[in-house]
Every structure is written in structure tokens, then in C-alpha cells.
Image (cartoon, rainbow, N blue to C red):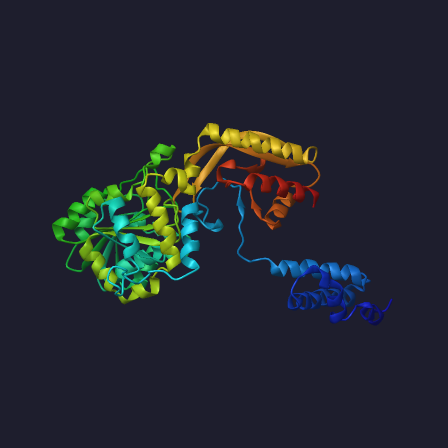
Length: 459
Ligand SMILES: *Cc1c(COP(=O)(O)O)cnc(C)c1O
């Protein structure tokens, strides 16, 4: 058939929209979707001379497309990867009490910047400062948008135009946009590198100290490790050097923890408390890494230094909003009340024992077997979870994995269908099959996951 004839078979936009009105999508979305569907088929006709489907089929395509347009872009995802602190999946899930606090504060007015005792203007930062000090022994604390902002603000306020001494072994890049040398340059501080990639000695720092020095900086390597023939200068040695020369010492701990991770079988991470009590003047950490709270950067330490940061104009550009403060306060209170392991999901997931995980894996396997018998082989296998993302990249936590091998479709297809589903499910795909780690499943995820796998197998 000639192409002009085929093109005339396509309905007009309004006709097509009229056929879809039953679906409940707003008409502007239906119109936009109808235009897209018609454009697609027009191109198919012109390019390949194909016969377009009938109007009813086209209408179905329009509804599918319009419904997709109604889906939120930012959506909850099921994290079946076992990576506890997954940067691409939103880092820390918040505790229930943090979520409730956000909702309460977000939907109305609050005393963000009003001192209710005096009725005068108050400080937004005051709502969490005392709690942070109580938890860590710091004299003062300040919360900003994220840890990158915290480091930037501290360098800007304390070392603009001065030298900041950093070991070459600690000039790290954390996720692309945060590189110590670049942050340093942008803050106006001058990087003074000392030592070598694998070995830096106290004398390297000593030689670099002079009238130009504004700060000695120690940086947690976060997402990599130097192993083998190495020498790192201990924080106590840096503190002593700083004190002798009256130069403040700052440590960017990155993740930052308030509890000893050894209790979860994870390697010891320097806690904020011990870093401060070793004499480090300022510590910077993220709120949404292993602390398990909202995105934030937290600066703790000497009151006189924090006073300088609080007066820096840059603070305004890095300030946190009421929802972050609500979530952070609730998270910090769980630590104060010693209920963090139970309440804060990140800690809760790290604390799961081998027996807990084996039980969860068995449960999930049974549910999957009932739902998808014959379409997929399912086995249990010992494996490892990861703490993840800029925190403890090489720390393995033992777990039991549920391993899937679809019979009728490839593993890659199943993985893609799961990711494109609603809700999206993110799994690990490795040579041994599709790996589902029960460690990072939240309450209620199990049933949804089983349904998702069943749906994805059927296409
Ligand atoms: C993660 C990390 C940062 C950046 O923190 P954000 O909260 O992601 O901005 C900075 N320094 C170190 C050492 C880190 O691990």
C-alpha cells in the first residue's frame, strides 16, 4: 500500500484522546502521549512502509505512555544488592522517627529561627548543636548541606590564602565531584602536599610547617586503601605537631560514626568521639553515610574555630532546611537514647547476624518457590554484603544470598525487567546468577519483591 494511504489510516490526535478518556489520566498527558504515539507510527510508515495498528491498539499505547508520564521521577526502589549504604540508591534510609519528624515539621510552621523562650530571633543551627556536643564531647557543632560543603566552609573560613598541609596519600577523590586538591583550590586555601602516595612521616609535616600554614588536614581515604609498604602519620602525632606550632588540625572523617562498628563485626572505624578526644580541633562528617541520617555535613570541635565558620558568609549558601534538621535531630536522639542500633536502618542492617540473614533468605526462597515454580531455579548460597559507598568499601559482611536462574529468559533480561518495574528492584548480577541479598530489604519489601520477580518472569 502506498505510504500516503497508510498515513491516512492514522486517527487524529483528538480522536485518539477520545478513545482513552476512560483511563483517568489528565487530558494534557493524553494529548502529549497521543502526539508521541502518532509521531512514532508516522515515522514507521515513512521509513518502512509498515501498516499501523487499529485505533483501539493505538489508544492502548497512548494510555501506557500517559500512565508512565504520571509516574513520579523520584521513586522508592527495593535495594536487593546487599550494599547497605548505596550512594546511587539514596544513601541512608531514614528511621521511622526521623520520617515522622520530617512530616510533622514539613507540613506546617515551626520554630526554625525563633527562640520560643524569648520570642526573639533564634538560630536554626541551635536545634542540633547541644545534642551533637553531648554525643561526641565536642565544644561546638555546626550542620551544613553536606560533608563536601563542611570541608569547603572550614577551608574557606580558616585557611583562605594560607597553606593547608595534606599527605599525598590522602589527596582523594570521592565520587567525582569531590577531590581534595580541587576543593582546596576553590576554597582559596593553598595545598601543601607532603610525603608520598604510600608513605608519609612526621618529619614531612614538620618540614612543611611555617608562617604560611593555616591548617593541618587529615583525610579519611574512604573509598580506597593503601596496603603494603605504607606509613601514615597518626592523628596523635599531628595533634602534637599542631599544638607545638599553634596550628589547628582538622580531620575529614567522611562517613563518621558515633558507635563502635566492631560490635557489628565490621572493622573499627575511627569514632567522632575518639577523634576529638585525641585532640583533633575540628572533625567533619556526612549525615547520610554510616550515621544513618539525612544528607548533611556536620562540623564538630573547638568553639572558637566554629565561631569563625558561623560568621563566614558562605554558610548562608550551605545552610540546611527545616526538614533536614528535623530528620537529623530525630536520628541523633536515637543515639542519645541508645536505641540507634534498633531504630536506624543502616545500623540495623549491619547488625543482622548470620542466623538472621539465613532465616530471611530461607523465607524469601520459600515464597519465591511458591510463586514462580518451574520458571526459575532458586538456591541459597553463602555470600557477602558490602557496607558500601565511600565508607568501608572493602569490608565484607557475611550473608546468605538467594540466587536466581531464570529458565525461559536470560538473567540480563530479568534484571532489566526488575529494574524497570514498579517499584523498581535493583539486584546484583554475577556469573553465578542473579543475587538477592536479604540484608538490605526493608520491612514489607519481601512480598513486593516476590510479586515483582513473578511479574518480571512473565514479561
Ligand atoms: C563522603 C566523603 C565526603 C563527601 O561527603 P558528602 O556528604 O557526600 O558531601 C568528603 N570527605 C570524605 C572523606 C568522604 O568520605
